[in-house]
Image (cartoon, rainbow, N blue to C red; front, side):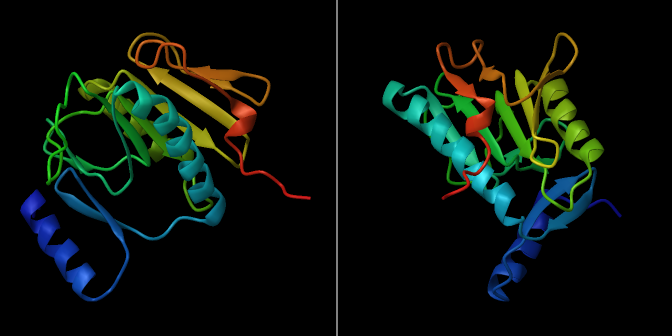
Length: 184
């Protein structure tokens, strides 16, 4: 039995009414229910969102969203990357529904319970559907892998700086800034 976005919306409503805080996605007719992330992963997601918003908002470049923003994709799936960016040129006004667009930037952060392969496949699928850049952040190995439609993935480490010139010219983020700080 192949499920639809409408089926997913019904399940989301039931989960909300039961006060259950789960993220859901529709992938190849199957509803995927995901629990909460570990704390480090969420800190990284918040930091990435903050760093991107600080660049995007003052320049009115577009929208940066978190995993709660669902994207209705051309392949019929409904996915929500941990962090995404849609340029203003592609979306003038944010919809009050799932966005029927492929974000230009998709970011996934590996949680403690995640395997790398499904996250990499998710990012590769976004690239196939039109994302320009996919980024996989791996706190376990302290690496950031950047995927683009052309070329092999590039693995960055703490000594490197993340740039996305095709989407955010001038924006730079030292990889070491992505990880949660350790307070004295």
